[in-house]
Length: 71
Image 1 (cartoon, one colour):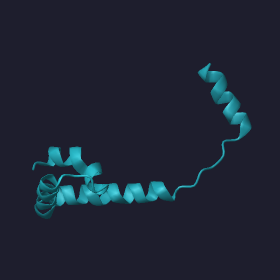
Image 2: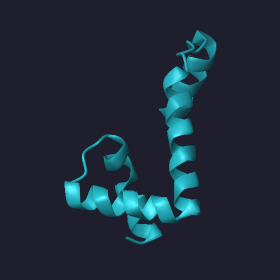
Image 3: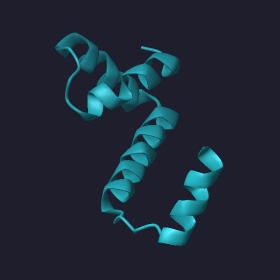
């Protein structure tokens, strides 16, 4: 597997949805490629941080301005 191919499969890998043979290639690649291993680690960190975000309500005044500009 090449680095560009790994990028296509990363989310399926993280969701444990890869076919067994593809998963084996994926894991073999990340064992030997420091850049891809870092890419996966950073992606996992981003997903983790995103899941920790809390929703902040939009002030009504700002919401009205946005809706006005979208019309």
